[in-house]
Length: 77
Image (cartoon, rainbow, N blue to C red):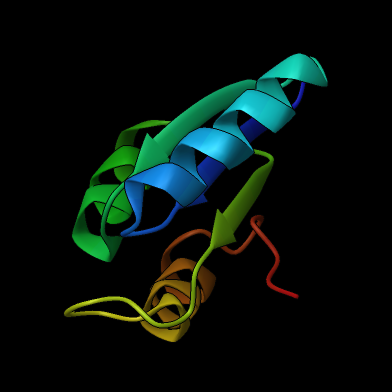
């Protein structure tokens, strides 16, 4: 079962994506911000992280930069 982290500051988008990935058989975690996603990734392993780019505070680009340094096995594309 694929483990997916969805990062978006809009609740409706997080919920819609979480429902779609859950229905497809994935184990889904969600985060409303980059710091929340970082906290999850620091203690949990995921196969895919799907992030919005434009968010309040830190951006999806910030998350990708942090993850590439901290979690190299989680490739960015």
